[in-house]
Image (tube, rainbow, N blue to C red):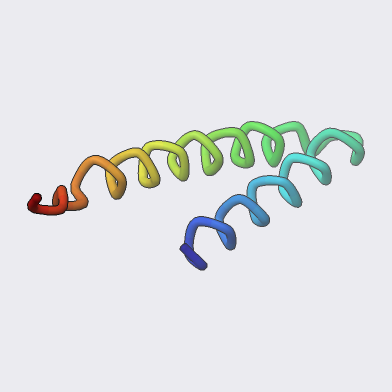
Length: 54
């Protein structure tokens, strides 16, 4: 869970820097890519978790 939150934080920081600073639009793209990869990682972790036995 901490890795997920850390990657979201990095994505937000890169996105903000890329959106605010002139000429650093590639950081915005990298931030969006990191966020998308983080969502895929979280989805994969939730789907992989074994179901409890009743």
